[in-house]
Amino acid sequence: MRYILLVFLAFITATQTLKSQILPERDRASLIDKILADRFDHVLPDIMDRTGIDMWILITREYNEDPVVKTMLPSTWLNARRRTILVFSYDDTKFKAEKLAVARYNIGDNITSAWDKEEEPDQWKALIKIIEVHNPEKIALNYSENYGIADGISKTDYDAFMNVLPSSFKSKVVSAEPLAVGWIETRSAVEMQLFEELVGITHTIIQEAFSSKVIIPGKTTTEDVVWFLRQKVTDMGLETWFHPTIDIQRSDEPLENHITAFTNHNEGQVILPGDLLHCDFGISYLRLNTDVQEHAYVLKDGETQAPQFLVDAFAKGNQVQDIFTSNFETGKTGNMILKESLTEAKAEGLRPSIYTHPLGLYGHSAGPTIGMWDSQDGVPGTGDYKLFENTAYAIELNTTVNISEWNKDIRIMLEEDGFWGPKGFKYINKRQEELILVD
Image (cartoon, rainbow, N blue to C red):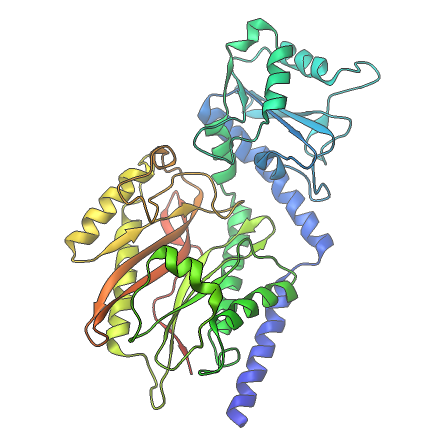
């Protein structure tokens, strides 16, 4: 009883410590605006210079916001207002981007209103005047075949813009895809400090979910753990960007495919001693998102550690991770990294599947797609995008391992958040290297 009480008190302390890390709303807003100002001053000019685009126009309307515009709004703007038009004009001699809004208001402290409706009642004419003054070489709009995040301009706004644009500028209109993707995928130094803390919180919540505080073998179901995760995040003042899943692999049940595992998780299975548990869980905070998959083993009576055959199987998952991340190299496409990694892992006798995606301002974010679970030969379009520095990824993959003791295959499914920067690859807040034990 004393041991149980100490464990319970330890979890209470851990929960209080976690909650103390979460900022009040007012402080969150202040930090979000500081991060945004830093991104406008440093990330935006760098991306515009890299892509060779000297004018970027984003047009959106209230409640139908362009996904990129949503990441540019100040903390107190939960939506755009009326029709909001942003114009970024890059001066390569000053390595600086002018930030204007053809709107009735300043967009926070970063983007200055450039429209006096009393002087020029027509918003479109006000926009054309700005274009004529700057006389850009390229005018980038957010339309994209490959990336939904970069395809934010509506047909209505596109047609309206092209109808008022002087014919001398029409040939200068280009897709903003490389610019929009670059803005979304690039992480600043300040963001990465926060990201490390956020991934650490994610790991700690998973540790609590996979513990005797939450799981009573023979009674607790997988859905009970799922809803513990949802409630925990809500109680901490955070959010999830997708509904978590908990699933089980055990000796007397066949290995499910991805579709079956995804669609059947909500039925809820009772967790038993000897089960290999798996979670998929992510949280959102300060406009960043995490995405983590880890494994736990439910100890049987008399056991103090997981069976060696499961320990060895888990190590193969780490081995695939090591092979995969060793092939990261700036300038390689996602498809190149995928092919090299799969070839190398199979040569080591492994049975891998890799489906890694960019991570950051969105969960399934923009950048190089490195495989999908049903596209292991490469992904056209998003898989052809190149790897750039200062970008983050959900290192998502699995390896199939035969367990003779269970007379079946199991799948070690791992997902840990990582960063690719000037010094190479690193996990943002470590990775799981041994099974979590549920006592």
